[in-house]
Amino acid sequence: MSPKPLAAPATRPPPRQAGSLPAGGLEAAAPAQLLILTQAVTLALGTRVTLVRGSPQLAGAERAAAAEGDIEPLSGAAVMDAG
Image (cartoon, rainbow, N blue to C red; front, side, top):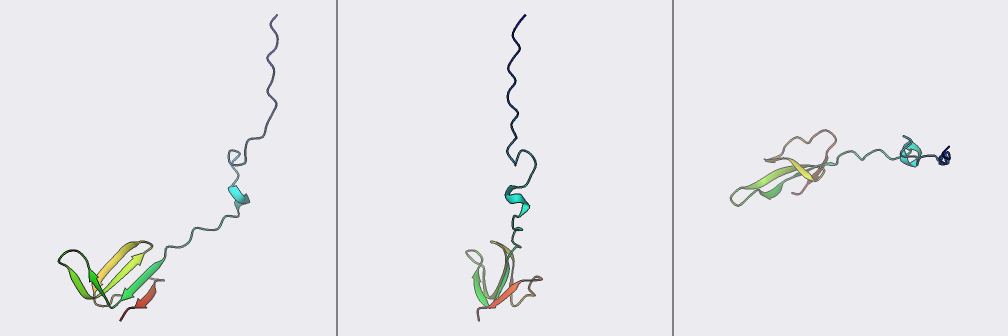
């Protein structure tokens, strides 16, 4: 007869492996994307394109729109006048 194998002691898995949320589910929600519209600025959009009175609109760190003249801001955007 061969000896019985030793049973490993029962251990609890770490909380993340058990399916619970880190910090007990009390994480802050992801911040909303920051929207900024700047009006009346001079934009150089390349080597030969310049908008004298332009309005760049930023969504987070990306340019969402750029147009000559004043444009309507996206809903919830902060508006800054550079003129």
